[in-house]
Image 1: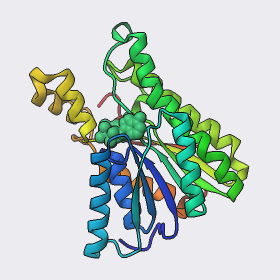
Image 2: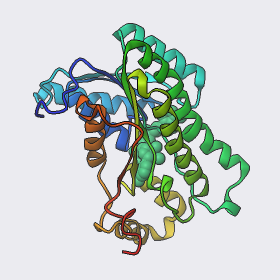
Image 3: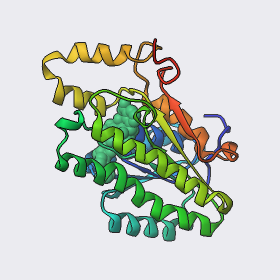
Length: 270
Ligand SMILES: NC(=O)c1ccc[n+]([C@@H]2O[C@H](COP(=O)([O-])OP(=O)(O)OC[C@H]3O[C@@H](n4cnc5c(N)ncnc54)[C@H](O)[C@@H]3O)[C@@H](O)[C@H]2O)c1
């Protein structure tokens, strides 16, 4: 890792960092020198991320002093988020970066989406992000600055078939990003979001298994060909963008939504 976008001496929270995009971001941030708090529901998954970061540090891949710890936090629980953030901040002195990444999938049109399913998605994808924002933004302002990055989706920007509840939730992530960005622009807190198209993670494998078990290969091919580039993205590619946006090199960037989408948003008729 070069010293570009150095995160040495920074403390970063990455929610949902036990898997997929969050895990790739946690590993990337640690390799750039950050201390990463892995916030997870799934203890085994969190332990694997921690192990991978520690292995990289021991092998010399991570020579900027990066490190990690696991905190068992359910982002849907406002009290737990508040308590964990306050405890980490007290112990580390400050938290510089918060990535609100934890999210869940939901498949179905409006008529197939029950009120219970709307609530389930709301609790993690909207309230979970709001809880992180509420904990981070005022504390970052009080300490003189910080960076928040939210995981939105191309579903925040364009229509995606069969994703009613998920699209509603990711639209909210986009507009919560704008809201926090403007309220804290003069207080040193930057807030942006990334809008990935299909990224090949356990999240994608899980919903193919759960919803299309009779035609998994066909679904995988269709989901890959959806992007004009002809494949799904990789978690590491999203982590590279996250790294730049959360570094001081991006200090003029706030209130922005970044598609990372193999071209789909700008080439809808491809
Ligand atoms: N993979 C994609 O194609 C894609 C595309 C666009 C946006 N996204 C978004 O990126 C984010 C990460 O997606 P991924 O594909 O890496 O998912 P993933 O399922 O691989 O990982 C999500 C992680 O979040 C954790 N998590 C779930 N609910 C939680 C909670 N309440 N509290 C704490 N942790 C919780 C899970 O245990 C899991 O480890 C999500 O917000 C998702 O909506 C993903």
